[in-house]
Image (cartoon, rainbow, N blue to C red; front, top):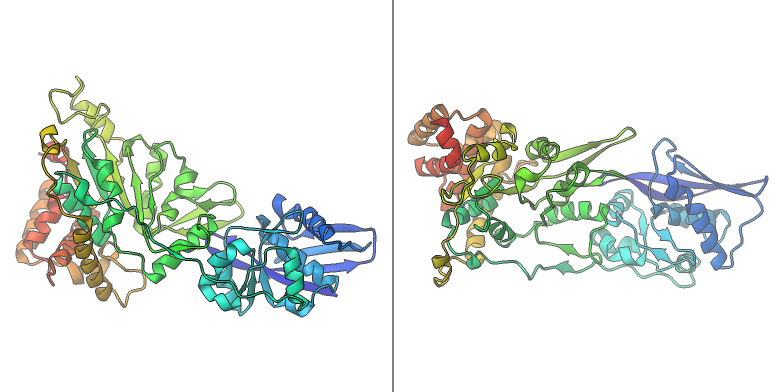
Length: 507
């Protein structure tokens, strides 16, 4: 007889079904695991053997073969321990084979039989619900998995709890979902003195998810502004929260099974590698752009990032997803993020201050900003110069607008976009609109068309730049509550398109 238990193998955020088949046969005593297991899966036999011995369960003097089907799919990770143990216990007739076959299990076994947490409980719960199976996972993963279907999630603390449940001695109670975390430490725009133009650009970026580049001298407040962006973004919708949590679950970043409604804010250092930013490495884990899905990716000291890292951002910015290609697999991760970049105008940082700039100006700035390629620069909808704040202004009383007021306008604009794009699956905000849909919602009036035509001819806007100006103009109109895009909206959108240095070079 072949006993069966079910589990999953992860390909990105997708959980592929895997069947653990266990057979006992005559022959020399042995314990083999087949089906393209990696090192962690192959070592499961020792963890399972030790866990059973801790429960005083001796393996028979037979040949034990566990096959992870489909055999052609690579198996990675320690979460295969529990399904392997389940199929073996069913083959030994310690638990009913029918109950094991109706369960989808994942979990790592300690040598004393305790169940240790593993990554990916949320996608596994989605797969179990789709197949109509009960999910069996470690107690530490129960709160995370219970968000899908709490009534069909069991979270034992050890292997003995599993045996007692299936034998009817001590049935397990369904797991409970974790708490919804609230970020109580969001920073307020009220703390920023001056920089009204940058604040306005930040509001537009939040309302339409437009990528933004800030250029300014050191200490002008670029990082301070970016850190306050999460405070004006609307909370994640239920669908967005599930998408974001799926990526975090695969990466093992969900805190005690709680799901957050706050949007992710990722700020990797400029020494990060391509694999760290885009994804990859051992197991092809999600990178920073995927961990920032539905949130913000802040790249400070933007030109200091390696050129190869910067260029890999071009395609994900356009498509909203990234394909991590490996020899034996192609893993797809979502990465629809808001990119906020900050840069000094030159290497010394004081290009725009004649009294402090180095002797190589303006070549210093051209060389430094030249590290950002033209195609990548063209993908920024908003480009803002952040001038230094005079020390005298720092002593003035605070008179800025609080984040709550700005967040209310952003939320109203997002609601307009949600109503507008309700019938489009892949379009949620203005930044996603393209083609005929963009022309339908963002075609300006006659004065606006004339203005953008003059700008395109004077400054050489690319087709991508032209469409991005229209998207930004549509967002500005939404913030004004206007049904149509007019000339003032186009004029403001164009003003954020070119930096002063670019205007000087063009003229």
